[in-house]
Every structure is written in C-alpha cells, then in structure tokens.
Amino acid sequence: MILGIAYMGAMLEREGHPVALADERIETDQSMKEHIAQNDVIGFSALTPNIRRAIAWAKYAKEQGKTTIMGGPHASVDQGVFLDSGHFDYVLKGEAEYTMPQFLKALEGDDEAAMAEIPGLAAMREGELIIDNPAPPLIKKLDDIPMPARHLLPMDAYFKNNPEHLIYIFTTRGCPFKCIFCQKELTGRGFRVRSTEAIVDELEHIIKTYDPGVILFVDEILTLRKKRIHEMCDEILRRGLKFEWVANTRADCVDYPLLKHMHRAGCRRIYYGWESGSQRMLDVLKKDLTPEVIVNAAKMTRRAGIWAKVYLIVGSPGETAQDVAETEKVLRLAGPDLIRVSVFNPLIGTESWDNYQASIDISDLSENYVSSNRSGYKHEHFSQVELEELRKNIVRSYERWYYSMPQRLRRIYERALYYMENPKYGKKRIGRAVGLVPPPKRLVVTNHH
Image 1 (spheres, helix red, strand yellow):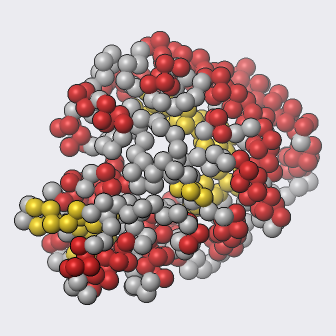
Image 2 (cartoon, rainbow, N blue to C red; image 1 turned 180 degrees about the vertical axis):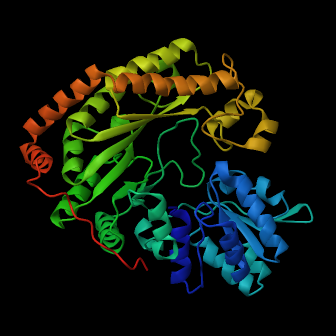
Image 3 (cartoon, helix red, strand yellow; image 1 turned 90 degrees about the horizontal axis):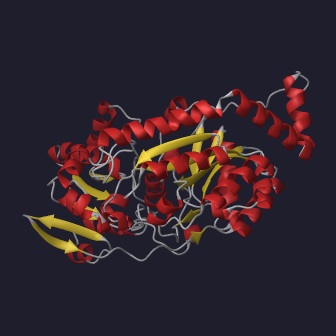
C-alpha cells in the first residue's frame, strides 16, 4: 500500500476535485488502461527502482491524448529523466499536497500566468524548459493535511496479497541524519511531527474500518523523539486499542524503558537500519553509529520481547573482506531475528552520487536503474557477481547460525527470562499453548469503503 498518492487523493477530494487512485503493482494492465481512459489528467509517482515503468505508462497515457504529470521522490531530484522522455507534460517537485490542487486549478482555467507561478512545477516544450520553479517550502503543520484516502485504494487486493493485512501509517516527515545513500530532497533533513491526537485518531480509524493484522509505521526514524512515542503509547493504551504494530528506527534512538512501553502498546517488531558492523564502513556511510550501540540495541529489543529485523549494505566504497567479517561478527553478537542485505547503490540526489561519480556506470543505470541485488557502482575490490554472491552468503551463513540448536536454546532461555520479568504475557502464552486461552478473534469487515 502506498501512502503518497493516498495523501494526494485526500487533498484533492478536500479541494473538490474528482480523483481516482491506481497502484500499478496491484492493478492489471487492462485496469490501468481503464483508469487512464476514464481520467483527463494522469499523475504519476514512483520510487527510483520503478521509474522505467512509470515512463512506459506515461507514454501510453500520452498516446491516449492525456495530460501527464510526474511527482514524488525521484522527480524531486531528477526532473530531466521524465521531461527528456517526451512523455510527461509537467513535473511537480517537492511535497505536493498544496501545489497539485493549484496546478489543476490553473490547468482547468487555462491560466498560463498562474501555471508559471506554481512552486516546484517544471515543464518542457520543444526541447526547452519553459517553467522550472524551485520546490515549495516543506509543509510545517502536518496535522493540516487530511488523513490518507485509503478508501480510494484497492484495500481488498492489498490484503489478498498480504496475509498479515498490513497497513501503513506516517507520523513524521524528514530525517536529520546524514547517511550518504539516502535521498532527502522530498522531505528534507528536518524532523516534522504530527500531534499525538491526530496519530491515534488515525490508528483508531484504521482499526475500526479495516481491521488490520499489522500496522507499519513507515517513518524513517519513529523514535527520534522518545517523549512523543511514550505519549503515543500512553494514548493507545488509554483508548484500549489492541493491535500489532511495527516501527522503523535507529539503534541509537531506543532505550529499554521506551522499548518496554512500546511492547505494552502493541509493538512486536522493529526494523533497524544498521548497514554494517564495521566501524570503518559505518563512518564511510556517515551512519554516526558504533557496533557497540548496535549490539546493545538488539539485546534491549530482545529483552523487551520485540522481534528485530535489520538492513545491511554490502559493497560500500572501500569495503574489504575484513569489513564483511566484522559485520558477520557483530550479527552474531547481536542476534537479530532477520537480516536483509542490499548492494550499495549511489542514488541521484544523494551525497554518494555526488562523491563517487567517477565510479558510477551511468550507462548501466540508464538501462537497469537500481535494485537491491546489483549496482551501477564499480567497486574497488569486488565484481558485481562477487557482490551478489557475498550478499547471498551473508544471509545464508547467518540463517544457519540463527537456526542452529545452540541459538534455538538461547532464544528459549531468553524467552523464559522475558516471561519471568513480564508474568502477564507469560501466563497468556502458556494458556494459549495448553488451550485455556483462546487465540484473538479477528473482526469480519465487509465494507472497506
């Protein structure tokens, strides 16, 4: 489920514009064509790995005589790839909840003067930029943006494709850290937050309307300000909302009291961006972390009864076999429950793109762009084939270790310690195991709209 277009849909509805949303990952080719046929203006948004597909659909839309406009993270840093294709009439850079309604009003009124003043708008005619406005200021009051229009998305199809019935929610925008691989142009390096009341109102709406199995907080760093998460957990508990949720955060943005509070409020998984266990690679990537902090966070998370998944990067600039060995050592000291390993990719609009231009195969990127398994970056010590094998081997090796009998016994021991510290959960778990406590019942929700 994608929230970017759901926010846009909500804003356009509020401004009185008829709007439909389509997610190309869920729709069939035929249903995509029907959406395009039924609408006059076709707006696109895509993350970097998907821009080729967006361009292909824009080509089809232009062939049907439609007006096309591109927005989103990649468009905010690389408008040329869309305008140069000849398949987009406009690009809208930056956060566009306010500028998209402006654009539609100017378009409907054929008001060229108003069009030329829209922040973030770019347009090319006959090979020349006729509009190229800087992105608008970041939206300060996130509570002023309406709740995402999930009712315009194919929620039943999402649930059919995801047995967990996963739903996303944002509570913040922006990230103040300086990791060299992260695009910041769309949401900035500041940190803007929604109010506790607005967040929990949306959570309550999601639970009552869609009965999700899991809610994923897709904020880049949910727990950057611990006080607000304590407040959010307090409000979830006060309202008696019972649901399972997942957080994305950093290892240096948690402590044990916070993790315990999150668990009481329903948090059962945390996704950490570690990237490496080598201090040298952490410094290259400007993670501002240490292996000691990483290991300690993992132990606290496990002690709080929360399951941890971590993201790693292999093939960072200058990485050696010794750096990989240090990462594998840290993994075994920390013991996360799942790891995901990607190949280092310098994305346009990031410091890594600016710093390593000489080592980036631009022609390769123009054909394949980016994926988690390969990269346009020409590494100093590993070939693309070696990096892919290295990526797979890290996962295989860790999974063999994680599922070995000594580690299974360690987890049983740690789980027993957890239940001793939290007897309420221990009694419930034992009760379910012996059939005295029934499993939680799911609501039957027949109308998602």
